[in-house]
Amino acid sequence: MVFERKLYLEQLIRADGNGMIKVITGIRRCGKSFLVFNLFRQYLLEQGVSEDHIIQVNMEDRRNKKYRDPDRLLEHIDAEMVDAEKYYILLDEVQMVKDFEDVLNSYLSVPNTEIYVTGSNAKFLSKDVITEFRGRGWEIRIHPLSFAEYFDVVGGEKAEALESYYKYGGLPAVAQLDNAEDKQNYLREIYETVYLRDVLEHNHLKNPEGMRELIRIIASGIGASTNVRRISNTFKTVAGVEITPATISKYIECLEDAFFVSEALRYDVKGRKYIGTETKYYFEDMGIRNAILEFRQLEPTHTMENVIYNELRRNGFSVDVGLVESFKRDDNGTLQRRNLEIDFVVNRHDERLYIQSAYALPSKEKVVQEQASLLQVADGFRKIIVAGDRYTSGYNEDGILIVGLYDFLLGKFDIWSK
Image (tube, rainbow, N blue to C red; front, side, top):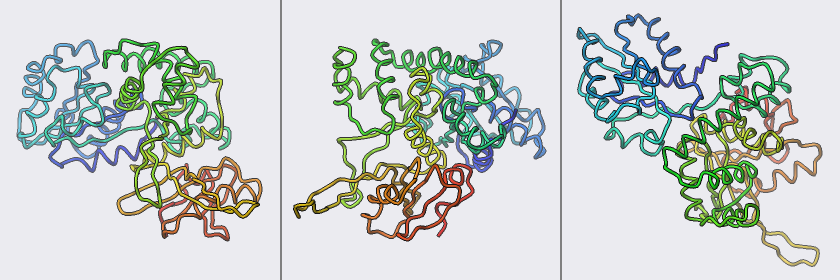
């Protein structure tokens, strides 16, 4: 079972020749190594690059332990380069090399090299990738399988495939398992032994149970507006433990830097400013999120919202949560002020979309409810409802574009086209 990862392969190909170190980042087990060492390597061979001009080293392989010494690695690569033709240097989990920054920067001045490296832990935090290489790093962010990538290989009936994707997520290794029990056991195991351990060890955190409980709290509240003070109060109420908002903020930053969760900031659409008091968190992979909660809290509405958020981020868009002010008179004629939420304010360069996630639109009343916040926005950008129970896409009489969930996830409807 091979997932082609066309979106990311195209990014690797486009980056060839840009004069920078190509840094492939992303949550562990999302397919970075397979992308570089298999798919990209095969592409190079098909383009006529000879095997002896592809220098690859997997630092996690015990047999390559000697190359974790930076000077030994430099010597090895230099010895493989015997002519002036272009060489492709592919290094997996390069953060295991001491002073790896110096090693990689050493090849920036070598004109016949292209450098592609992968990394997963604290040395490859998303915010540090560019500065780590003195402004010469080109980050390519990899995500777990999209539903389109998953369905293209797994196939079957769409609704059944989506239900499985909602429950078990998009890690390639999980998608290749047939048995539900095997999927759940795998997800539980890698959460404990890979993801959680990485966050705790690389950040030298001294309160593992506090981090565990924080992750459970965030997992229980995907799609819900919150803040660190409210989470701190939840600790006191639920766990009987006092953890300061400052500590919680630090822990959340560790989770974000490990690509475990993402933050969606609240944005005042009419005021055109960010509101710092509230935020939302979404999980990079729903299978891991569900494993954290022992597959007990499987709400399709919040899961759908998380999947839509991930799809938007996967395509490189900036995503915020919108807030729009509305005024309405009550039965006594008194003008009441309300704050209405737009699930996603999506930005691409100078373009914008407003998107609501609706699990179902069974009635006119439900449509009115879902589009109320969208109709309060007076600008000319497109306003969309992604509906889980619609199999066709089109505009309604209020000018709102209603897109069927399958059309959206399978890329069969261009949400940006005019």
